[in-house]
Length: 357
Ligand SMILES: [Fe+2]
Image 1 (cartoon, helix red, strand yellow):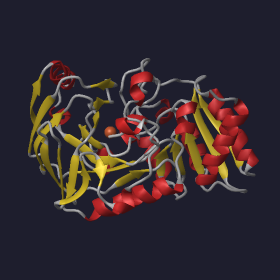
Image 2 (image 1 turned 135 degrees about the vertical axis):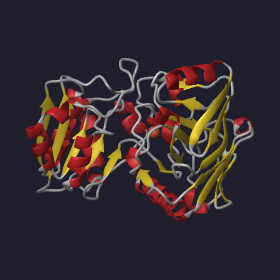
Image 3 (image 1 turned 60 degrees about the horizontal axis):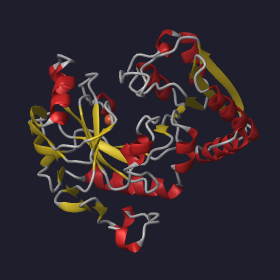
């Protein structure tokens, strides 16, 4: 539940986190009649902060966004065919993306001009409930430092996962929910980080367990374990029951060897996000599932967002619970619990003591 005044106030708080101030220019990008109330709220919020503001509204609508009304196909957007609109957005200090430019060439071009970008497409109550904080940024950046200097990442779970990533080829990317640095991109809400293993440097077995989430592209909780065997950075086998059958068929449909690559690996830091969130709310593009506190986010397919060459359209994100994750054999997570003091956040616990695990 929200009202327009409350939403404008929320956008003001977000723009303040993004460092928007008097004299800056905020551009809002939307398509068709989508998220018009978001555009109005951001424009009003920008004006409240004394910033200049304008909206770019595209007449063509991309149906690419993950949701119950669209398939998960990314990279091609209506903005790519509209040169004057791209040029206008590059003139702003910050672009609020209300359509979904991620994985597109035009997003990179806008960032490279020094314009920072904030993606905002989640339901308003998720924006409020998972609202970013400076402390979340601190924990994501503390995580980034640990991940950035590690040479290897290994993660395990009780279902039988044991896989090792050779690190150092690709940078670490952080998402903490706001952008106050030139050229930076982020997504409101967020709270996770990731990197990628060397192209031929991921080996082992990932056993996706009951309760883990295949958020992209299925938005499902896994009910029967699925065993994925990885050799030299490629999926060579997927075994199990129904879920494994779904995965095999989905990946095979791309008819592309690159669809069997391994994408990013990292963990979730947002203590306000719930593992169970997807069970009662399917409107989201899955940020709550990707960022819930202590998850290990295992992903297959493309790595071009990290600077790699795998550009397959087959991207699968699987946040996994209760994993143990080690950097150069130092434990970061044991059974889904952070082991490093700097990464821990107090979490709300409203359950009776006997139900708190
Ligand atoms: Fe992903």
